[in-house]
Image 1: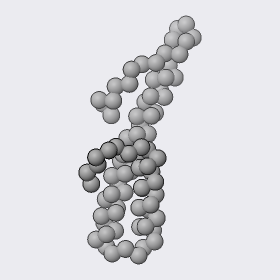
Image 2 (image 1 turned 45 degrees about the vertical axis):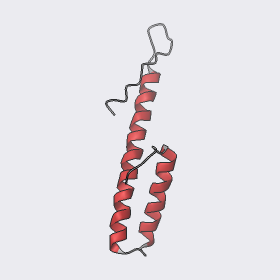
Image 3 (image 1 turned 135 degrees about the vertical axis):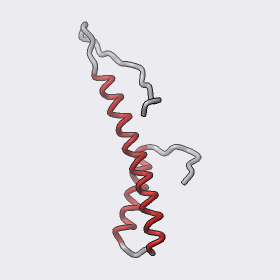
Image 4 (image 1 turned 180 degrees about the vertical axis):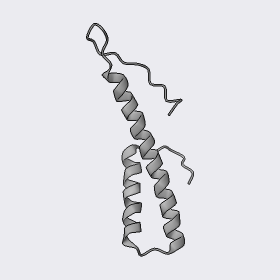
Length: 80
């Protein structure tokens, strides 16, 4: 599933929810079910990555310097 544009967390989650609903309905052939499951796992992975990035950003912003002022650090997403 190649993407030309990265989806937002909300869009990824909507797609994941739609896939889950279709799988729970139980009225799809096995081959389609496997394809949808695979697509759902990809959306789940993207959602988890985006949540981890957001969590890291929040942690960086929560830092407080000795003077009591908020300290923010540059977000380096090369590790994510």
